[in-house]
Structure formats: structure tokens, C-alpha cells
Length: 155
Image (cartoon, rainbow, N blue to C red; front, top):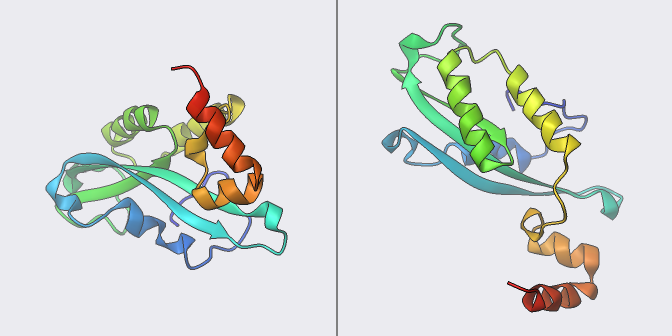
């Protein structure tokens, strides 16, 4: 992992080390930009209540590597691809456009502000943030009741 905000306070296991591969899938060179939705398996802890599943959206865009103002060691191709992470697709798409317009990939303050803003106004309960395993594990027998309530809600 090239950059994390807030800093990760636990070692990255073998499953989470694949974030870069998942964020830039096969065929990435065929598109100028796209969003990729993914999740990584839970990190297993001694305490089962502390399982964490990472849900992510990677937004990438291709630009001419010669236009980058502060080049990192890995920028050497004619077309440079770089993932940016978040969990709200439309805002992330706009943020990624701004990030690439600046052409300075060391400047990540806007992502930190985006993260802080998301955490100030945390989303209401939404099933799309749970994997099926985590949902059943957390709510056990109540999962069926929750499912029935969802089906019965007004449209």
C-alpha cells in the first residue's frame, strides 16, 4: 500500500496486500478512466467482534506521464495509471479528476479532507456496506427478520 489515511495501525495480511491489483484490473489500458468496486475479506482477529471488511471504490484515470509535475519512481510509461480510493463513487470521481488535473501525486490533502468529511456525516445503516457473511454473523437469526422488513418496506 503506497499511502493510507488514517495510517493503518495493524500489519497488512496477504489478502489486503492485493489492493493495487484489484484497483487496476486487466484491460485497464483500454479505457481512459473508470470506477472499480471491490471488497477484501475480513482480517481475522482473536476477538470476532473486531473483524473488518474493506469495501472500496478505485477510481483511475490515464494521463500523459510527461505532464506530471513531481514524478515518482514508478512513473516511467507513456500512459501512467494510478488508483485513488474512497467509498462514495460520484464524489470520488470528481475528486479524482481534480487530483489528476493538479498533476502532483504527492499532494493528498484533498483525500484526507474527503475522508474526514465522510466520517463526520457517517451514512445511515445500509446493507450495501455489509458482506453477506458479516451480515449473518452480526445479526444471526435476526437476519431473516431484517430481510422480511426490507421486502415489506414502502417503495
